[in-house]
Length: 206
Image (cartoon, rainbow, N blue to C red; front, side, top):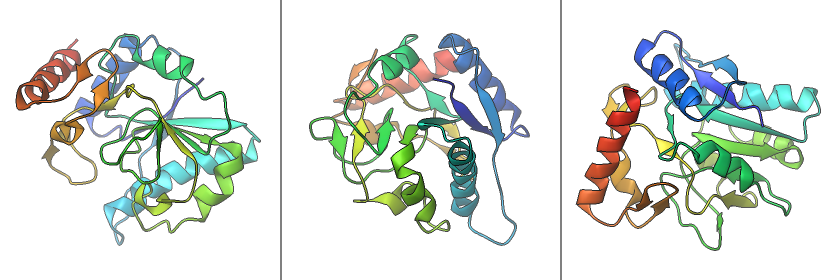
């Protein structure tokens, strides 16, 4: 799979870290798409449109599916991207998620979630994806609207640091309490949350 990566090139820290993350994962073929910011709309509208642009392109190209990463995606394992690709669902799906920030995972599926840092959208879902309210959070807008598969253990999460959405340093690692990450294990204590942050710090400077 060739991932499409949404990136704000003006943010040098996130951009350099993203390129390093692609290198660490052995991803040499990836397509960059610019992030979008509107002067007169909430930041979530620009984030939503950046994802929509890629899906619209995939629909025009008649691609059977399209994979999108945000530039703060973090794979705990050096083999995380390979694991995500190798775990590609054999049965039909609408969304295939590398991980989520909020939401319940039951038998490898979720009905509602937050987190659009790594997902694959099936061709059969393009119209639904493009049909949700573009001014809502793109992930929350699709709650209960499809068959959403999740890597379990999750393949990835997001680096802590500056968020294009909140415009401040944000650490969401505590939201993974009770969940499991491929190559890291289960997050089941405050100590494990801190270990996760420490590992992100190590990977961000490699």
